[in-house]
Image (cartoon, rainbow, N blue to C red):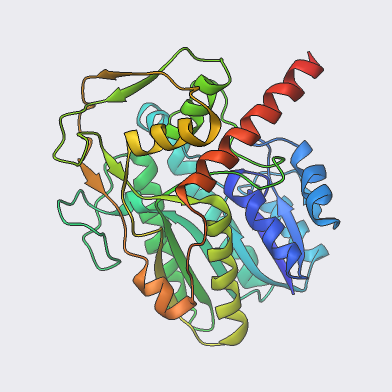
Length: 342
């Protein structure tokens, strides 16, 4: 089976490419390197011993996408990771996000229809849900994103469902991630954002490697076990395996229609759970300071993976210790490599 991964050199995409290759399938990747690095191609080869076919193009580029499908007429399924993903930037530059994140999906679907490729897995997000005081979050809960990035995910979900309704021979699976963290056990693949990170674990890792002085913890007076915010963190390798489960469902069923699944652990971890576990498994490397709450942050927000467990056979296997240990191992190796290059 041949699978196209758009944005396949990014954080989640690269880990998923590894899992697909390790199961004996072929992978084609298209990525414009706007939020990824070309050396990931070689890292994937080192981990798997297998090559990928790589196209350095923007998925919004109709001619490039057409060329890719023409040169790979046997693509069975597409996993669509490509898209801008910084919440803050999406608030400052909404047009950039709407044009790229939605335009790329339209370009991709037009090419898939022309080339009779009938299966697509979409990289969505738990941020499509409305703020909720009820946990865990289930797939039937109300949808109402709070920022343009989340809106592009929700619009893409609706676009894909409308497309499938008009083209019932197509299969669409929407995967709503919670908070992916961790890195590949090799230490070669992980999350490496540019500049000051927006997400908790990359920020913790930059403190641990000495790039930042301390972690700001936004509020310790929530109605949670230790007063800090609680979220659902999932190891990126477990998340990648969730994509494999979705692909296997498509291989085994010609007529799936539209499927929607949460991918998370179903367990809420607080900010201090993460910090304390990180320090426990890696040494006391992370100092933190309590600061004011951020506007709009919820006390608790975690998902229910029961539907994915029942229909896909999806189950997470990595512990919080695994997430913290692998994250630091990747950050530490990256720091050494950067010093050698400089």
